[in-house]
Length: 200
Image (cartoon, rainbow, N blue to C red; front, side, top):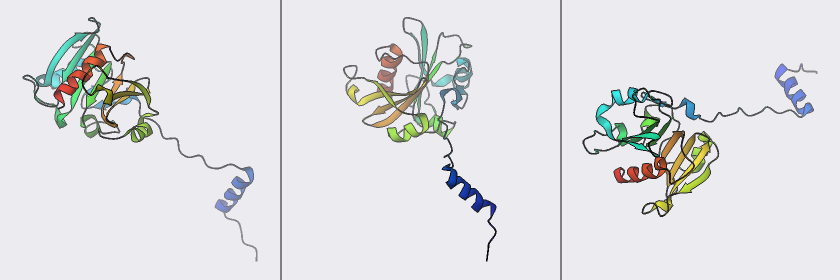
């Protein structure tokens, strides 16, 4: 006795006959331009963050021969500054110290951007997990001879504007935005030196 072919069965037969298989859904990688936690995002005026968290600023200094400004917020008491949520260190970069200047790079060491924002990863993970969310990791440099144990700290670039920073094989920080490719630039050298001072 003949049985009528169902639409699903007919579709399967046609697919097999033509050699066409269903493509796996494309998983989109996280992009730096979409990063947001609390009031922090690339392109936001620095004054928005500094106005909301005025007591957490540990240090603000011109770097790169005065062509850039660094805003350092520690995850534990730093000078007279209060710690940020989750014990996270957040470092923001702008062109000048004007409150209307846009944030052009963000570096963080801790869980706050994951816990209160849209960043898909926490610290403490290994590179395979990071690559699944941010894309393939390309080794940029370490900090050997810059500070004690610097050979264990490695910067990995995932896209033109996303970085992970590992220490002894595990991620302990990330950066997003415009960052130098030179480890001796103040934005990297000074960043890591200060982070190590206040993350112990």
